[in-house]
Length: 416
Image (cartoon, rainbow, N blue to C red):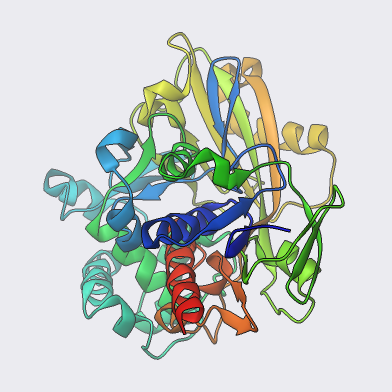
């Protein structure tokens, strides 16, 4: 038995956000996490002096919920250059945001990525993404991102060379089947904020939220095996009976405990980390595969963005492979290294492979019809609530918002 009013299952960003809001409301709760620490999919491992996030992840300072609850200065954010560098026909081409880097406007305009008309359409896309409120944006007519970009008039060159690896990398969806509402939202975030990495890795975000919570209200290595009515049973055999239960795990795990749930399928991604004595590309850039050939979708020299990610004598590279095929890690590493050799020459031969991380449930698919996340209803029935990025948007902000909204609903339900 337990004395807490609310039991939160899952200490990822959604569960932590829920707990923080309940804490501010003075509502008693217990937060259970099956693994050894908090963070869920947003964690950072320390390996031989390197900071390895669980897959390539970035943070936007424009996220509205994150702005509300996080202390940005304490995260010591390091920013990417606004734009990307794209591989095409054996060369690298910079495409930077002319609104933030006006001196790069001519270089961007004359690059072979897209037509001159495409470059002016980007301004139209930017204006449209920044128009209206976020709630109104998610109420607009929608179609797939691919059809949306085609309807705007972007050329096949621009779509395939830039948008497919860029937005495909964001959504882990190289086919661009993701709802146009999400495309507009993400473009709004990139246009109005900085894309960043915390100095201590992405795991610093959940750790900061956790620091506001009393340690006695968090239990790690506490796996839930079943839920029956209002009774929760742990792997240890312990049973807990709170007034309200919040399911804050990712969708696949949530469905195992609540079979009536219908979470969307998930995209997967594999991230390979390499250490190099010298940076293959200098500057805080995201590098995209605009050629569409080979396993690599995007690459980043993380230590060029955030020097704290690697020891002072080495550079840290992150390589992302979308929806990887079922193959052995050595086979995938060999394919990736072969492509790196073509891109950067013989220096890539001696890069040290540090780690390969495959995240099967990396991000929920967000296809048409995609509901307005502002209308998210977390109460399922009889004191059972749900939150997570699959309930709102498949972003850090979506997870934080869903946890906050759920906690408010729990408060109202307990007070009814």
